[in-house]
Amino acid sequence: MRKLKKIQKKPEKPLGLLMLWKLQGLKKSDLLLDLYCGTGAIGLSMAKDVRELIGVEIVADAVECAKR
Image 1 (tube, rainbow, N blue to C red):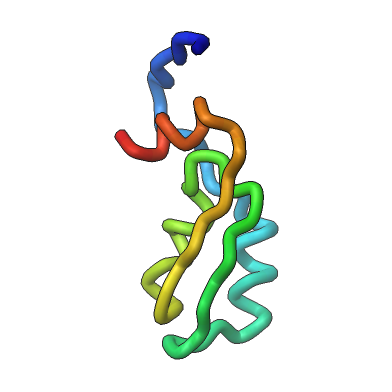
Image 2 (image 1 turned 120 degrees about the horizontal axis):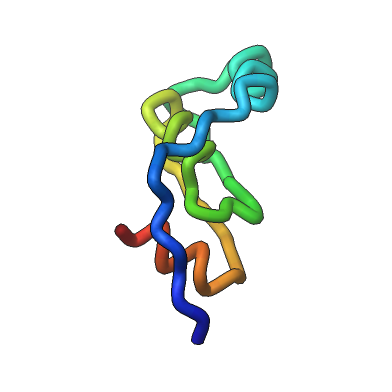
């Protein structure tokens, strides 16, 4: 298994994608699927707007980073 490099600064949120989600009218009762979520930064930023967030990622290194 490869060793991960520690990220020095917090990655910026891709605001264009976040704005698209906001425009779609997420509701507190919605289930948000974050496919290919990487470390989960985008989904986590939207989690407060939905009932449940499920992130799906197959890259083991990204999942390990997300657990930290």
